[in-house]
Image (cartoon, rainbow, N blue to C red; front, side, top):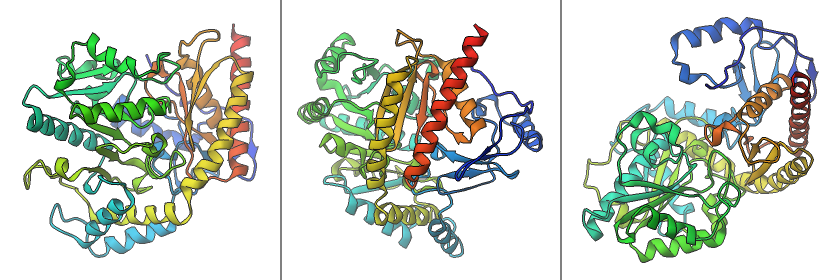
Length: 459
């Protein structure tokens, strides 16, 4: 059973720095009616984050209404790449909202501008763009395109979608069947046998990171390569921030081309500068057949995109691949404004520079703390694997306690679902400064020390 946060306010040490302020009990007593209202009217599934009621957010900081301030290590779950509350994005939203709020799939000038801009930034052959609302929708679309393509080039037996264990691709029926966390799809009951997962070659949870593991994984599941319609993977795994080896990915690219299977990179978390490059797949020196984007695309409003080869994207006839809010004009305006900020301010470069510092500091921390089993990631995304010392067994309780303690000290982060819940995710807005990054890493180390001392006293 997942742990939940206590809503009884209690005193916590005050904090006052340039970037953080904790000046009340925690949770804030005045916030309790709001938190209780949410618990009364929302499903239990919506619980799980620290009991901080967001009031406003700017840059890399989050504020409540009672004088407290946090450094944000979540980016609102990897959304605010260009920073929270950017006035440039707000002005673009306001301007567009005064003209046109919605238009379904009827043409609009601003939708044309966005797809042209994205196509101009993406490498060949990713020159067709389909705009959607959420990352899950892009995965569903990719599944549809993979199976359509498979049937077109190899017949109806060519329908298998290969994905990876420990992966997360969304919450909808198809995206969860492509996902690799069994507990998240127990509800499906009758799983589609055309979805198979093989070990993800992270070199830590799966020690064999050679491409031979891919081929043996198919054999063990009795999958003939000629029946594979597509291979989908997160550019880095969202639950851990783990990347595959470069040579593995290059060989996978060749394998897919050789077997007429589409290679799909789920960039919903990795795109728009998060990993230190504009597109995460650039780290591998490959280009997928389909790339899926979302989250950091607008740094604000819900919008996502599928980018792909023209011959694949045009498989479905007119009117067969629409969505009610496809290319919503207000969301398009936000995405264009966010993209310009990412480019003009070189936020991918800032992610690379500060990411090198972040991973250096975290690696040093891992060498001192045996409860840190592994540090994954690139750029301004990192996953800290909390483990029982001497093992690789996830320690979900430790991850929960770390997130809770850091929130009390003025740093907001989260622990994603998967791996037994033992990973702490670090993903600040790409506008974070070096000074704030160093301070927040120091707070994380303090939180670790305090939680471990508390555990030792309770033992």
